[in-house]
Length: 305
Image 1 (tube, helix red, strand yellow):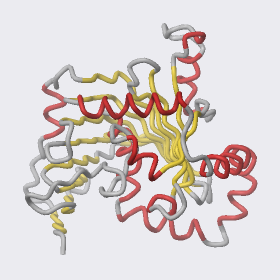
Image 2 (image 1 turned 90 degrees about the horizontal axis):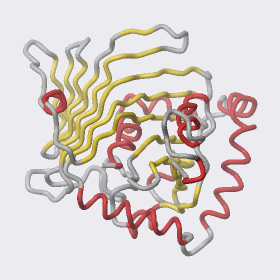
Image 3 (image 1 turned 120 degrees about the vertical axis):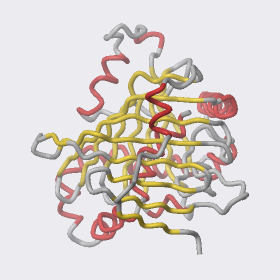
């Protein structure tokens, strides 16, 4: 279930269109942009956290407990749906883009898992909204990206027929996600510590929950729990990702939010609302897992070599 949240972030970032954003971000022009805009909040959060987090051989007992619960949760997943809002912030230009939509995941294992993500509203950095419908469906080893406005479909094969493949498995899939997976795999790839709920304005509703507002449990009961995951040196994610913070409901561990901080200072943030776990899919959710008609579309099929 929780794996879907980070797929929303990492899956969209891993697609080819993101490469141009990563490349210039590492070049010299990034320094002036990151320094004044991002340094003040990032330096205390990243620099001190990275060194101490990587050194310890084992996480604290409370982190171990959460990882154990998430591993068990992954084994019992049947279905999960939620409304999603995603914000992408570029450190170099200080521009923000917000997309709104819905996510659906079915199946506990990689072989049978199906994932659908649809964004049907976009708000640019000026605050102007528009419809730009994009749908991503993973099924049977293929990731399909449907661009409804432009009538374009890109199908990428991530696994051959019959292969045991999980697109979300750490160290294996195209979208490595440290949730709903074996704790040992997560700790091999990440140094995991407790974290505070991210402070960006985008997450203001989370702070309302944590303070007991909006009908949430009192703050004394710890309405939310957050973990910070720093990729270990030499791992695949360490090349582009500085840290990931995940926010969960304390008790059910239902996903609430994720913030992914790139090495270049870019941020991708996601809020999930109205999450439903293992209650079955309504007709709307089932419809998202079905591919739309592509008659007359431009289709690009990219099988494995």
